[in-house]
Amino acid sequence: MDFQRQTNKRLYEEHAATLQLLARVERVVSGRAGAYPPAAGDPEWPAFARTLLSAIEVEVARHFEFEERDLFPRLEEAGDGDLAALFSEEHVTIRAVAQPLADLLRQASAGNLTQQQWQTLKTLALEFSERLGSHAQKEDGALLPVLEQLLDEDTDRALFGAYAAG
Image (cartoon, rainbow, N blue to C red; front, side, top):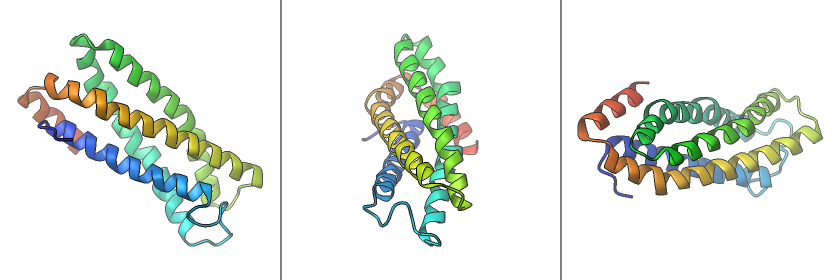
């Protein structure tokens, strides 16, 4: 997509990176990228788990907080409160899956999962992937075009600067 606003460009780039990571999540936990659960001592698993955990705890959290604090109130003021409410509700459901997934990823990195816990991790990872992927695509199609019209150049510059610094 071709956005003029820096804030939109940044969010779109983050969505694209997220979708790439989620495709990797699906390959890993479905076993298409190797054995799942990974064999003890698998050298690739810890790096993958750290990447996914960082995405959950840092990138997704930061992205959601920015939208909820700085963007959704602007949508509400502009008469698009229903859109803001929809995305806020989706943030809640994504976080509800992300937290137990993050807990299991930490345990898996320490080598402390039972077979049942590996299955739970797989289920949560696939649910997280589906929910977050769908959410990112909806934001690309609905939120970002609205913001493109809503944000003026000065507001965009201020928002982008705060987000980039943050």
